[in-house]
Image 1 (cartoon, rainbow, N blue to C red):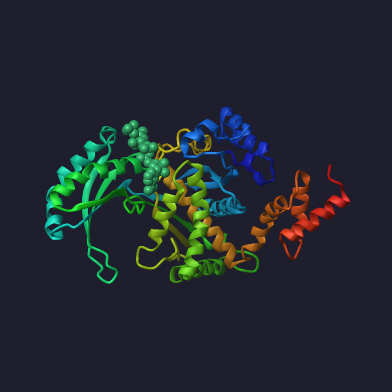
Image 2 (cartoon, rainbow, N blue to C red):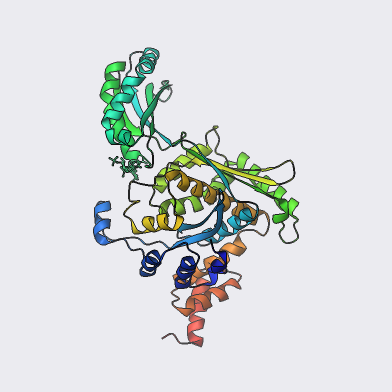
Length: 434
Ligand code: NDP
C-alpha cells in the first residue's frame, strides 16, 4: 500500500479519497469510477431481495486504514451510521501496525446444523444407534445437497446431545443431533438447512422419535477466528500517562469487562461496531455474526469480554480476540450487491478465511482504541467532536454550514440539538442562507 497517498486521508473530500485509493493501487480505474458514481442498489434487485420492498436504506460507506494483517496491508471498507468507529479502527490499527501487525488463526470452517427430536423412547439407545449409523446419516445429508460434495465439502461428522427434561418448567427432554458440515466458501445457512431437513426422515426411523425442527445453529463453535497483537508499552504513552501505566490500565479495563456483565456488554458492543460494519459492507449476515459472538461471550456461563489483554513477560501488551465468524465469500447478496462487490474489490480477499482474518482483526483494533481512550482521555472528546457533524445535519445545516456549525458546537458546553439549532439560526442571521 502506497501510504504517502493516504496521508491525511480524513482531511480529503470523498472524491479525493477515491483518487488517493486509486493512486495507492487499492482501486483500479473501473472501481474508482463506480465509487464516484455511487454504490446504489438498483430498484429491480432490491425488489427481488425482500418482500414488500418499497425503497432502499442508505448508510455511509467508508474505509478504515492502516491494517497490517498476517503481513499484508488492507484498507477495510465499513458500512455504518455511527461517527468515530472508522477513526477509532484506523487509529488502533496504526499503533498495532507499528508493533508488527495482527496475526490471525482461522480454524477449519465447519458449520453446525441441528435436528431436535422429541418423544424418543430411549435416549441412550438412540444415541448409540445414531453413533453407529453415522455413515448413513452423513450419506443422507450429502444426498440432500450433492453440489457442495462435488465442490469438495459436505457433511463430515455427527454428534449427539441429550437435553434432559425440566420438570419445573414443564419442558420435555430433547435428543439433539448435530451435523458438522464443511461449507467451503459459503456461510452455508441454506446448504445446512437443506441437509437437516434431508436427514429428518432417517433420524425419525432410526430413533423412533419425532422431529421438531432441523436448522443450522448460528453458534458456530467449529468456525472460530482469532486475532492477536503484541504491542510494546513504548507505543502506548498518552499525555501524562507513561506507556507502562496505559498498558496496566488497558489490562484493568479488560479485567473489569471480564468480571462485570454490565461492562462486558458495552465492551463487546464496541467490538461489534467494527465487526458488524465490515460484515455488512461485505454483504454477509451481520445478525448471524452478532448472535454467535454474544453467545460465545457467554460460553462459560457468564457474559464476559470477547477480547483479552494481558502483560507479556517482557512487559509488552498482548491482545487477543476469538469469536465464531461464519462469513461467506459467496452466497446471499455477496456477488450481486454493488457495495458487497466493491468491498471484495477493495479488500482483494481470496477466500472466506481471509475475510475472517480481516474481520476479527478489525474487532481487536476497535476494542484496543475504545478501551485506550476510555482509560486515558475518555471517549467523549473524540466521539463528540465527530458527533457534532451529525448534530449539525440534524439541526438542518446544509453545505458549508455543516462544517461551520460543527466547529462552533465543539466549543459549546451543551452539545445538543437545541444548541445546534440556536447556533444555526445565529449563523444564518450573520450570513443569510441562499
Ligand atoms: P447461498 O445458498 O446463497 O449460497 C451458497 C451456494 O453458493 C452453495 O450452495 C453453492 O451452490 C454456491 N457456491 C458457489 N461457489 C461455492 C464455493 N466455493 N463454496 C461453497 N458454495 C459455493 O448461501 P448460504 O447457504 O451460504 O446461506 C447464506 C444465506 O442464508 C445468507 O443470505 C443468510 O442471510 C441466509 N440465512 C441465514 C440464516 C441464519 O443465519 N440462521 C437462516 C436462513 C438463511 P451450488 O454448489 O449449488 O452452486
